[in-house]
View 1: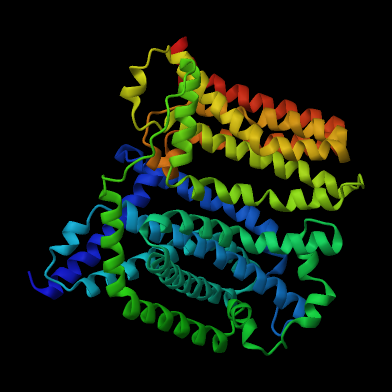
View 2: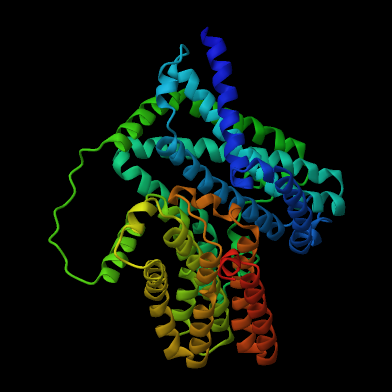
Amino acid sequence: MSSATALSWFARHELRLAWREWFAMMTGGRRKRARAAVIGLICFAALLHLPAWAVIGRFADLQLPLDKSSLIVISATIFLAWTLMLSQAIESVTRVFYARADLDLIMSSPATLANLFSVRIAAIALTVTAIALLFSTPFIDVLVIGGGARWLSAFGVVVVMGLSAAAVAIAVTILLFRLIGPARTRLIAQILAAIIGAGFVIALQVAAIMSYGTLSRFTILTSGSVAAHAPDVESIWWWPARAAMGDSEALLPLLALALVLLGSVMAIFSHRFADTAIDAAAYGASGNRRAKERPFRAGSRQQALRRKEFSLLWRDPWLISQTLMQLLYLVPPALLLWRNFADSSAALTLITPVVVMAAGQLAGGLAWLTISGEDAPDLVATAPLTPSAVIRAKIEVVLIAIAVIFCPLIAALAFAAPIQAAVSAGAIILSASATAIQLWFRVQARRSQFRRRQTSSRLATFAEAFSSIGWAATAALLLALPIAGLISGLITASLVAITWKFSPRRDKKA
């Protein structure tokens, strides 16, 4: 096989891997679900046009030239989307280094490693861009329908964002490898990805809290002080916003810059990409790392199982990327609580739904990792414990983790607004019904399949999401309109009951 043929084969191999990963995420690895997955994806895309219309439909009539405030809001929205792409791209690049097992195949290729890894870099960029285009299409469709074909140039802006985010992610990850080594990069890269993904929104909310006492980021974006310090409307800083609205003179230079950036990263880092992949594979295969010797700890079997689950959560290499962003979003509510500690203002009410929603999502994720994500089920089955005792210990671990995270926030809230603290605590407990949903629909899987957990049961996925939203809405309404809160609570409880009615665990008991 010639070098050119090998390079062409490797390009097809990378695209095939990306397709298989996406297909497995949509269908759970079951080909019989392919038709249902396609129908579900089409329905989801169609339904996504409704919230897209509600969020940005009113901006479709905007015309160039714009004032500074409008440019600031549009540019901030584009930058927020870019940071989310960058966060996802950093995680994807890190997974390529640590989770791929095809290094031997690559090393045996007749093509040069630099060319092969240039193809891999291009494949990563295409994957990030394709996902961005997929999720942005409903929003751009709404703008095109409401404002005309000029909004089609927003697709070009999304391509620019995807290519540049992938290029920056690859450069940052390889630099981390060179600076701190493979042993720390996996952890630091996940922390960095979470901070980048949530940092811009948190920074805006913190500025809004400190300046205006509200969580609304648009309050700070539309303020006169920000407009006063912003560049002139003809500045290149507004090129992305102008390009999204149909300005081809701004779009073409941005596309050129994105391609130059990606090409530069491929030229500079392709050979280092190979060295980095080899180092990561060597780190993952290293089996002679000596663990610390710890004295034997006496305790009951239940305590031993709980310690085992806590240890697994602590050692989970991808747990940071799965949960840290949710925890970071608790920073603005905590700051708002501290800011209004002595004032029982209406701003404090905003804390409750945010905290309840975060608790529900975090409980669902941890419950899947502990209950369904078991890498050694045969070993656990040999433990001198009944299956019910094993499940109870796993649930206790999830509830303890949730309590450790949210109890300090509720305790502080109790001093500022006791009634709101009681409502928030009750809603957090109810939002832990996500744990029950995971229990009812548990399917044995490896922890590394966490990103695909939604494919095990679509009903469980939607029930978990809507229960978290429902309990958050219930808590907020109880504080503002108690009657409406009771109605919302009954609807959410009915949803959970219906989910239990259709759960496979109930059918097995019957």
